[in-house]
Length: 185
Image (tube, rainbow, N blue to C red; front, side, top):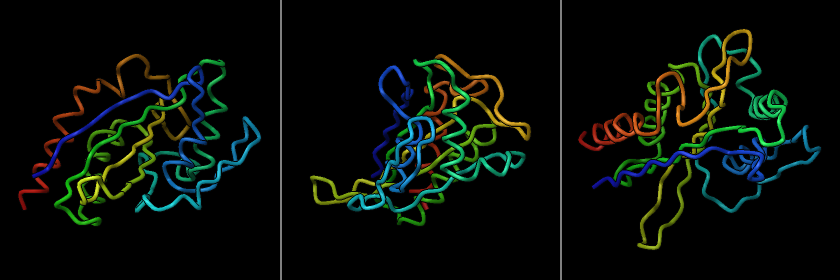
């Protein structure tokens, strides 16, 4: 039986969050952070990351598909020392599904609920062993705080809204519905 879990949080400089470092950790990659002149290297991270990709609207600029360029551009576009640099959605995935099925489940959810509204989503799927002897598949979805167009980033979406008309509560039916549909097959 699928267990449903979805959390949303904001990554803010005032809490010490760095968009490039967060993306590197979640994707298990090495990324250079131009703002802080550091390299975040999680490429030797012991297991866990089974898939990562960036999903962007069709009219997004080419640089939006490169993780290092994307998050360095986000950091450069936010000027304040206490800026909110990204939003993270963490969602549990059904254990009953294979890695490929969970990847398609996440792609459908992200495409339908986020990318279709102009957001860029940096997706990382993790699968670690759980204390009960099974696996704990889940996805980390980093979102830009601003929707993107062919010209670049638009106005910031702030407060509890995630995108045009979206709140954390409005995402729950989409996430749980996609998971329920996938596990009924």
